[in-house]
Length: 324
Ligand code: ADP
Image (cartoon, rainbow, N blue to C red; front, side, top):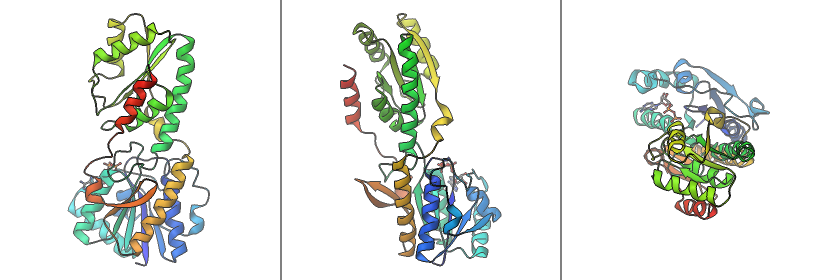
């Protein structure tokens, strides 16, 4: 392998730049050529490439988002689109690529590999932590810190006015952000896609909390909560059934994806980039780099895209105990 391409694809996440930097610098260290592809698979099809050397990635380890831009690309879902991409890679002399993205981006890489036997390695970059084969995806830790910081602020105003806040956080399919940030921010209840605790329990918990003398309450709600109501419907429901509360809603939205990556994400990105390039040079392919028990591991991409790391049930118990 003489030339490796790196790109970011799908939803962006903090830490992607640190991963790009790591891939580029590892290539420089190993004396392998490196080329960046702008705008993910779209740029691959269009031949939007730029040669990278160690100095091309100065001053980006601390930056959120991705300097290579990300894009969604429908053409790559077709055989013809992937053929164009292959031709562009060949023209550029690229022998292998590192894709930084989520399960969609990995699915594309897998298809591409099947058709052209092209060496690919994935680095999981998504704040949702919804990929199997790693306990942390890049950006997850940063997103948790962002959410906790914001909830701390909401708590200030909530307790000044004796209010109840429903805070919606990202997580359509998995409750990792809600559960971890919920425990970290001291939420009263945490509603996640994995478990339906029921509306009765919510009302009971809020009643208990009020009776025990708490001046404010914060309930964290993942986008895809199983309770079947969104934050606005929950507000209405509680106002109707529990008029003792003055209820407010806060939807955190895309700010959760932004910001400078946490130290954890920077370190993880640096480690994953090294592992990705080394794996390609060792002749490996079709694998995703992940972290488990603080060790880097490789998981077949076909497995990584099939599920996600399960939530830690023990955390739910801890949360229950904390809201005694
Ligand atoms: P993420 O990587 O964050 O999950 P997407 O699901 O949007 O993001 O996927 C990113 C890109 O990966 C898509 O725009 C498309 O180009 C490519 N992709 C996703 N699924 C497939 C697929 N089944 N076949 C080929 N390419 C795909």
